[in-house]
Length: 280
Image (tube, rainbow, N blue to C red; front, side, top):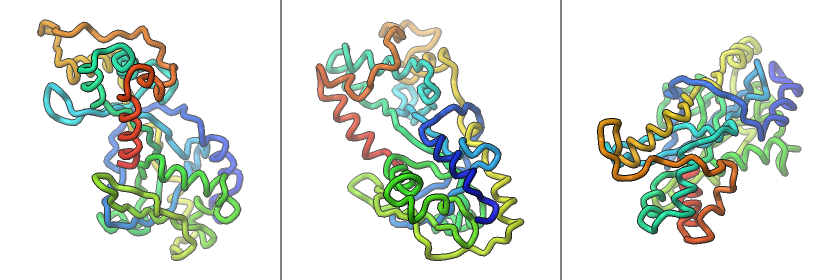
């Protein structure tokens, strides 16, 4: 299996559900996928520590009520830590007025994954071909990848999805428009199309993938509170607050999907929209 081996694959399988990375860096190496195109890549393991091949994270995002620009941030819940934005969202959807719940519905909490890829064909940006890039994806692609690693398709694909050699398989990411949002359900692994890389070239690619723990900047608890107060409650240090400071006494580990169902349907609508946005 060329430079990739079964030991690496087992470490990747063991770490599928784990998230213990922290870091800070720009994310301009992330591929941009657009509806109407099919992107062909090979998934790459993180050879230095195969258990960190995937980075599973949660992200908050909304259009700032202060500036009108989209703001987003990595959620500390990615690492099992307290998150004041998640806690405030929980509080409002549980005990807030209908007006407050409607406003809070604009704050999206999305579940995402990152993985290194070797780009075989990028029709949107051909200059990416032959380079290592980052693939950011949601639940639709995660299901396909998980099935290939340890599900019904594991016998056919398995470790081959990380192999750059002749036994490896391509991942074809087909982006289609479904209403207002893209869908990735037609994506698949395929053995069609071999890539011409020597053993040395393969090793060089495996050795030079991105450290996924350094892609995002993690804000401190106080920085997240400041972000929420500025871009959600439109407060600054010099302004007179019209809304009480956000509270942080709600345990962040309570199950978010059920947080609004006892008093309102806002949570269900929010989850439905999150599912539609899962691969944006």
